[in-house]
Image 1 (tube, rainbow, N blue to C red):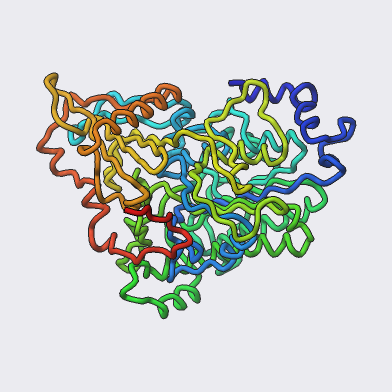
Image 2 (cartoon, rainbow, N blue to C red):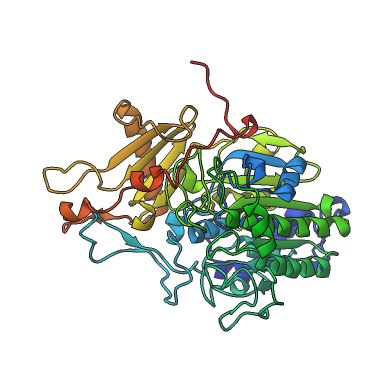
Length: 537
């Protein structure tokens, strides 16, 4: 793969000429003055990424408690996807996949640790395992290396003004947005969450905004900063990367919205945390601020908008003795490899190409956004640059995608969400999860892998494990996982020779977390428009 350093060296020569040529741009002009084929301005790109917003956490996807009119409006103008996935059940790996188009297994960023002060550029297996676990898990890289040509760098080379607003969580300087292709970065912090949602904010050193007006909400401030960027660049193509802090912990909301939703609680509705509802509304208002600004400036028809989330909904913490959200009918949530951990909302607005109100059941993943965006623009990757993702343009035009499967790796013991080191493959409607060394004890004293197999067409809630009934299918799908792990160069868990079954029996398993009544009460099925059709018996 071509390195970022080599790519940057070619700007203005072969690679830049190729990028310009692909778009029909006048080579003699500066990047800021470029126009597309036929003199038409290149479309703006607005990428909106929520944090910890689950598949069911908007009214668009069937929530009757959370309200998201501005996100709903996006879907009326574009295409919503029912089977979109994050590349990881945690935020940093998914964010890295968006910026590179690569699997987290390949970049080494496989856990949400990029806020820590230590620079660790490669993943590694831990030297010693916790005796409560059968596998010795891995340590994630803590930085997205500068070797990769990021999405921001590719767009900047093609003439875009680039701005990042909100959470980054891919590393401290020099791994911050301004060293990864962004001209503007606000608030310029490596934090994994804001100091608080309501001002005054106690930012660490290095940020470029103040502590806020009394009572100001972080998304109101971030969206107003993004609006400044839009206005400043209204006459040139821009890439606005709006990566919201919402709805991550520490949970906090406007007092008036909190009171509003306290008055709307339905005790029979498992989604009934007023704090989360208020946070969803503030995030949705930020989306509305961006879209209204585009309307006001006459940029709506010239702007591609992508809205999604970085991992599943937070079902293990909340306010007022309530779980923050409920992901049913999906099983599990943030941190889990079941559907609640990685299936995400996704809306793509592409004026003049995507029909408003369209819906797709094609399987897409966060590794696809980078190759999709450059395909939308008629660009090609730099020489020798390869993606793990694919362009989903065929799906956006109403067609099918040519892909064998999607994959996910989480090689860590995350007892706080009941997740063991595991990987999954989804091929068609079949999903196989491999739990590393969590099966039966073998003759050599180690433990075999354990498997869960689900037919998502019939069993979207992953309640019926068919692994024992279909051993041949398990074998075929497991071979795909093997190929993915080898291709990606993944650093993998190893058997733990110090495992103590007595200690292991005290670790709450994933069933305990996911099926606890307080955190996984059943919800009615979502509206038919977001559920895949059931096959006939």
